Image (cartoon, rainbow over all chains, first blue to last red; front, side, top):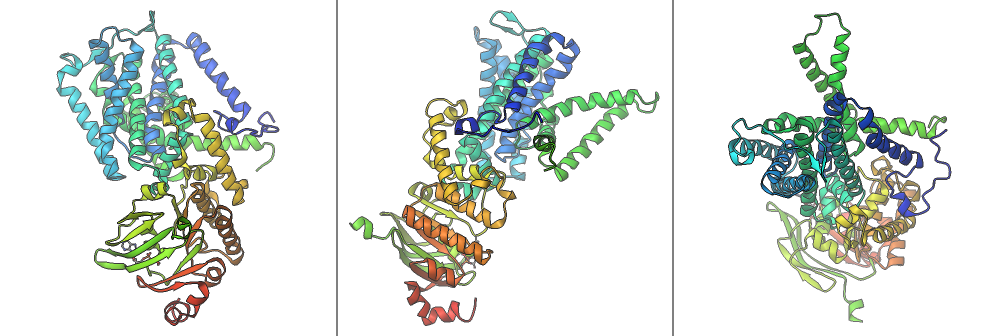
Length: 355
Length: 259
Ligand SMILES: Nc1ncnc2c1ncn2[C@@H]1O[C@H](COP(=O)(O)OP(=O)(O)O)[C@@H](O)[C@H]1O
Ligand SMILES: [Mg+2]
């Protein structure tokens, strides 16, 4: 009965707007954050921090960026990786060319550049929607990748096109070790997740959903459609841009256009489909799934007799499993893992009653 | 006193056609302040199109709209909302993925002064304004007896309640003019009585001027002060309910033979 709501009525509208209305949820979140910030860096092995937790966090953030645009504002996009690339390359060039600019400033400004690019490629959304918009964001994807590959200035005329990210130093502390990279990533992810959560609960978030659900009705009640859509592109682009900078600086340690290709855009899209469109927590569930599934599959294949599944087959198997899951989620549970999680919670809330 | 006695809305010679097909031909009438005007006529008569002209969703090819002293060739939806026109739709146009409360709150979006950033960071004018908005939304929800469903997703509600939520969302804007497109379509007698009472209450308590489209003549006669009859895009009747009821052309076109 620890999930009881007894006595927790919202006596004030302000408490009704809190991060979580139920005390249990709030405390679980605080405990989780404490664990993630204060315990994980000490107990996590380098492999876990570098190869699992950091990419998981960055992909969750990228999912969050796309989810604001697609899940909340209803604007389809296949250009996520393009805006991640803009964030990464802008951050790199700011570090390179603006002496004295601290790393945090470069990353945030990288997000601002990505937001601007996103708004630019979002302009067609004022005229077109659905499939046609998808095609126009695809153009962003190809254009940006082409730009960063062809114009040497962006990669400082580096012959290979792959540039090594500079060391991560914040306020004199070197964060280039696995725990430091993880903590820097976690800090950005937590801050931006809180911001996004507040936005979707605010007037702007409601306007996004109104435009998504019924745009004529939204216009008729006075919601400014153009401004609402472009703000969705801007915020989504900003978060994707920061995610791109983190991907390059804290995860890969290199900046290269190839890391931000169309398959990355699809990966981010799969994260929000599996995790849940229009859900904040869903981005984390979806990203965890995408990061952990390959590991789980290769572990599982380890239990098979030798030679039954080789490495090439394993990769194909992964694709098949993803494909089936995407189709399954689209048909059966468009609200994704977040919805399944919520259903579990509802059961727990009314336990031991059945309904 | 001229403010009071001048009509809130005046349509002058409105004509609308879709790719050459006339939907509305040269329609003029006045909507008096604080009154309930019913717009009736057979299906396809142009009633919904006329509401769409009034709040700027459709652009008429001819005519003028005078709303609250302002003369316009055509409205646009945003301008109409800003000037105090709210409406409901014939096919429910709620935001399906949102709760009742959130739908009602969107109806108040024009009453906002704080910026989105203030709201996102919960600073400046935002917190106090959020409380005030919520309070007003709760008043509307209470007025229409929707309290039990405030946190329910609107797509989970039965049809009759959805119609009521749509009225709540329109009402939340505190409109001068409320346009209701078949608010009682598909309802049983009990639900219609309830909805009629809500509409009459809105009109009386907030002095809101109402234009509504309704097929049930009993409801129209009870509720409205003024009836305008359309047929094939033309106006064939305009006056108090009793007078319109006796109009032979109206009887022929609508009340009698066809329905
Ligand atoms: N968006 C539109 N495009 C083309 N024709 C339309 C459109 N809206 C309405 N019409 C036509 O205008 C006429 C009047 O329709 P409407 O206003 O919906 O009638 P009512 O609401 O009285 O049933 C009909 O012939 C209808 O087909
Ligand atoms: Mg109609």
